[in-house]
Length: 296
Image 1 (cartoon, one colour):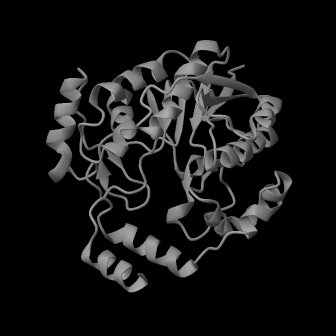
Image 2 (cartoon, rainbow, N blue to C red):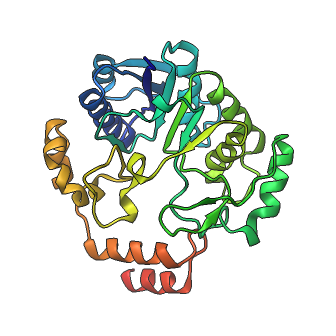
């Protein structure tokens, strides 16, 4: 049988809370799977004992402390050092696992979902093709082709994946990924996406199976949550108001009450949906400036 373990980066503050609910969701839907929670050495999450009850806590150094997003790659690399499982699923901490994960049973090297919004710098060929080629050269990797499609605005994109869900055969992918990030960060445009740019370039060396929205559903961009989700990527607790069909599940992991304490604006949600369907992501459009001016 092909075995799977889950990996995420825990921490203090919001990451502490999110990590607890993520671990509980995994334990509920994939009870036989190991959970590896990475905690930076300098941090002491309030729920660390709860994480130890649910899985294995790994403490380690952050390779690039100034680039917090990369801590999840540290988590994957650390889990690779101790895992006995065939596959590791790295998740962003702001996710919930709502069903059993079985995608890996088809035997590919890597399972990924394309980014949601293609109308951004890294998705627009006219703006970023030269940069992709230069970075590929820096990493001694092939220059990517625009052969995929973004899942929200359905635009042609290179192998540019949402790094909130990275399901990989256990080996050294995390280590190589971190080395690639460390090589080019922060000297690229929109440097906070270095994790996804390097993931895309490295993925060209792997047998990749492309997944759909069920495995990494971008709730912040949507107006509701469908009933067949495996992994829900909610970004902020307030967005979970839109996932009320999963109220019982969230009650079972003691999350629903926290969600009810947050405020969510459906008007803002509709605006976000509309602007991400039509306006560039990285550059603030004049309509966005007008909207923000009215609000402020």
